[in-house]
Length: 446
Ligand code: DLL
Image 1 (cartoon, rainbow, N blue to C red):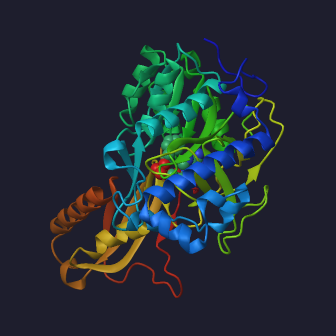
Image 2: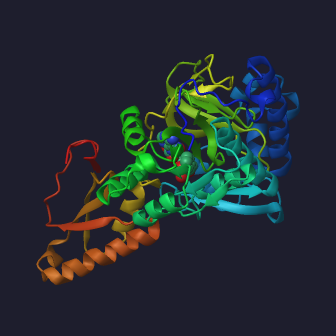
């Protein structure tokens, strides 16, 4: 099996050379044309956009340069939530063939829609990434991202199918089965979160899997933050090239950007997504190289275009003379968020969602602490919450039952298992300033 060696191992050809090597000037021309189309489409089809463009004094017919976009206000997750479920769709609902969704801070999730054309674009964006990093027909692609309302599974499914690969849509979980299939089917490509990949490594090592004998050559890992040391560890233990793949459902899902084999920044699919970095406090657009909040405008989507969507992800943009041949703008690996969103096993969780559930439960006090730990490379989340004086003295059995029932409520609201630990009244530390709701112990040595 041909292993991909990484740096300098350039693929013989690029999938869309006319786009990927277009260079700055040509790319900006392409983007401007597509931006005008998108703005006109939003204006013509959706009241929300019409109103906000009018308020900003922006006539989509009079956009003359890309920087005119700065006249438009940002779009936030909160606005998407307020327009739940389909208020920001820009095509009639009968043209929408798919929805996905991600969590909101509290209350409604954000719902994103795709026409057939949008699904095609999505598949195309990821297909380009995969092809340019050495994946072709004949590859066996194990997709260990979740399928369902999360975008991870389906995005890679479309891309790999378009390439003519054999797709194994195994989804997440059941690690021994993942390993068996990896070995028996001779999977060559893994699409997964980095934390679950490490967990697979660990379970595999425990049951005696020799990863050097498997066929895996490349992994597209993302949906959560990870680091260079984590990449080194994954590559050493799994014997595959690990590439950072970034995206968010509001913009399209995975496929917004990904590293090439140089592993030095993530090339953005700029013909579909216009990227800016802003100062999160002032909203001012920052020059390339300056760290700030990533903002994306979709340039080709129809059902759910986003205009200057604030991702809350911190990164910076840069151009370089990438040896892979692509001239697409790069973003640095996301290095944090401007809000308190936690990503637990690829699932976005806001402390406020947990609080909302807890506060509806009778006999709980409004004092809680979310404790994050790592076990076998997987994030674990637990919530400590005080019970009222009156019920604390009830029998232990009843408290256990109470814990389970709260865990059930959290699971149905958020979709992941959160262990609940009831605490005696007045035992959780009170803060004298801003409440400290999260105790992140993930970096501590076990
Ligand atoms: O996580 C889409 C995706 C699926 C990307 C599979 C890559 C692979 P959401 O669930 O909407 O979409 O979560 C989006 O996850 O704003 C980031 O905070 C975080 N995120 C995604 N990829 C990365 C990454 C998918 N490579 C949110 N590094 C984003 C760091 C990431 N954070």
